[in-house]
Image 1 (spheres, rainbow over the protein chains, first blue to last red):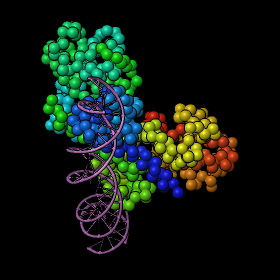
Image 2 (cartoon, rainbow over the protein chains, first blue to last red):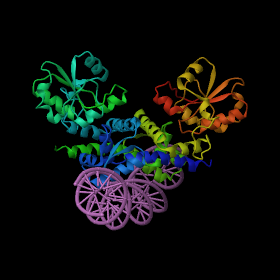
Image 3 (cartoon, rainbow over the protein chains, first blue to last red):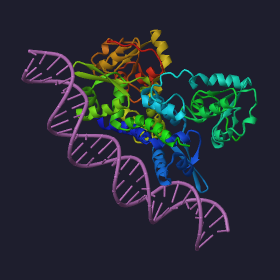
Image 4 (cartoon, chains in turn cyan, purple, blue, green):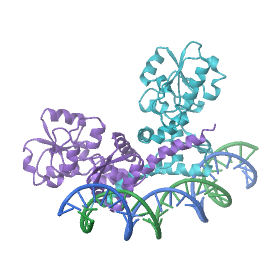
Length: 234
Length: 234
DNA sequence: ACACTAATCCAAGGATGATTGGAGGATGAC
DNA sequence: GTCATCCTCCAATCATCCTTGGATTAGTGT
C-alpha cells in the first residue's frame, strides 16, 4: 500500500482543526463567539488576554477556518464560521463533562452549585430540580404561562435570543425587578451549560421571593437543537 | 468578579480533551479504535508508529479518559471510552471536511475519487451517485433485495457489523467472489466517510461485471445514528 | 498631511510536546 | 525458578507553541 503518505496527510488535515482547539484561551474565545460576533478588543478583555495574544489566537482559529471576520471601519468583528463549529465545541464540553470528574468539580465550583468538595454525587436540594426542558419552555412560553428571561449582556441578546424573551442582563436585574410581573413564573437562561448568569439570576429571584427556574443548558444548546431564534435589539 | 480563576480552570479542563486530540497520530489511533479494541502492537503497526511512541500516545488519550484498557494475559487491549468520543471524532472530521478545502482534496486523493488536482467541484460520473442511504439500505436488506457486504478486516467485523452483512475483507474479495450470488445487487461498506476499502471494493466488483454500490459513510456513522449493530464472528 | 485608533506582524524567551533508545514491571510458558 | 513477550516508564534531544514588547499596516477624523 502506497497510501501511507496520503493517509497521514488526511489525518494531518483533521489535526489542523484539533490543534486550533487545543488551547484553553482559544476555547474561551470560541465560547464567547458562540454568543455572537465581537471585536478583538472585546474578546481580549473578556478572555483576560493581551491584545497581541488575542489577535494571535484568533489568527490560529482563522487559519483553521473556524472563525471568519468582517471589517467595519477601523474594527474587525470575529464570528464562528458556521453552526458545525458550535456543535463541535458543544461536543467537546459534553465529553469533558462525562469523562473527567475534575470537569464536573470545576463546573460545580464555577456555577456555585453543590459544595465543590468533590463528592458531588447528588446534592438533595440541587438546582437541577429547577431545570426546565427546552420543548416544555417553548410550549409554556407560547401559552403565556411563563416569562422567559434572558440575563446575558444586551449585545448577545441582540445577536440571537429565544422569541418572546425579555432582556435584563444580570447586572441590571436587581434594579429592574419591577419590570417583571409579580405573580408570573420566571424562567431564566443564559449562554449554555457552563454559564453562571442564569444560576445567579435564579438565586437572586428566589431571594426576592419570586417563583423562578432555569432553562436547562442555554442559548448554545437551544440553537444547536434547531429551536427558533430571533435576533434584533429588545 | 472573582471567578476568573474558576473560569480559567474550567476551560483548561475542556482543553485537556482537545489537547489529547491535537495530534495526527492520536487521531489515527482513535480512528482505528472506533472500529473496535486493539492491542498496542496492532495499533503501532497500523498507524506506522514505534511501540514506545504508540504507547506514549495511548497514555495521553487515557489521561484524558478518551480510551480505556482491558488486560488479557500479557496484552492490553485499548478501546474508545464511550460513543460520545466517537461522536466527537466524527464531528472533527465533519468540520475539517466542511471548512478546509485541503481536506476535501486530501480525501479525494486518498479515496481515489475525482482527479485530486484540486478542481473537485463535480466529477460527472462520480462515485457519489452510487451511494446508498442508511435507512434505504436497512429496508432493502430486510426485504432481501440486496446483499450487504462488509469489506473490513474480520476482527472489525467481529467487533460490530450491520445485521445480516457478509464479511469478506477487501484482500480476500477477488478470490471469494463466487460466494456472492451472481445476480444480486451488492452494497459494500467499511469504516467511515474516510475509509477507502468500500471504494476499492466497488471498483473491483464493477470490473468483474457485478452490480455494486456503496453505503454512504460507514460503520462509524451507522453506529452514531443509533442503527442496529450485531457483534460476533461471521 | 497629521494624529489617532484598531489590529496584525515580527522576533526572542521560556514552556510544552514528540520521538527514540534503553531500563523496568507484569504476565504466561516451561 | 528462568525466559520470553508485551507494554510502560524514564531521560535526552529536537521541534513547536505561547507570551510579550516593539514596529507596522489599515482605516478614520481633522
